[in-house]
Amino acid sequence: MSGPLPEPRPMPKSTDDLNGQFWANCATGQLCFQRCLECDIWRHMPRYMCAHCGSHKWEWKQSSGKGKIFSWIITHQAMHPKFRGETPYAALVVEMEEGCRFVSRPLGITNEELEIDMPVEVVFEQINEDFALPLFRKAL
Ligand SMILES: [Zn+2]
Image (cartoon, rainbow, N blue to C red; front, top):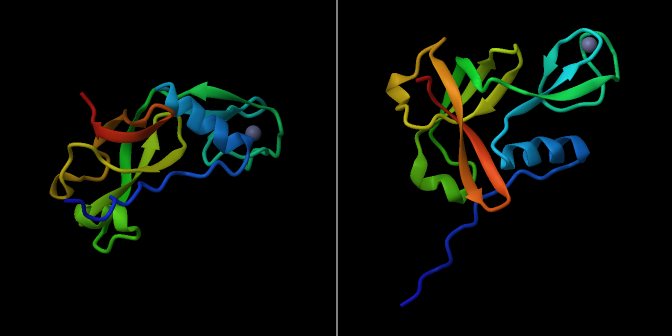
């Protein structure tokens, strides 16, 4: 007996080379952000120009993967059918040690355990052979 096919997981779309490189780095288990070569500011989302100094000179640099919870929301209504069974779930804003902020989800942290400034670290969930999703667990 067969039922309906499971809903496929929505995947990020690489809208340009910068987003594509970000996800390619994640696929190798590296959380990398851009760092401005003029003012040393780290940034995320990927973009060509530094919002701090206007420079177009930058490099990809691997993050320590460590940060702390800056904020979060609890989602009670799934915005995609794939996540219906997972509500209520948290979406985190993590402030990385390097200073940029990153939106993700917690792994192994219940909604009730979430705290502002909780130390967290990245862990990659391997979605398929070409894609790994950066999530955050309590820092060890
Ligand atoms: Zn800059």
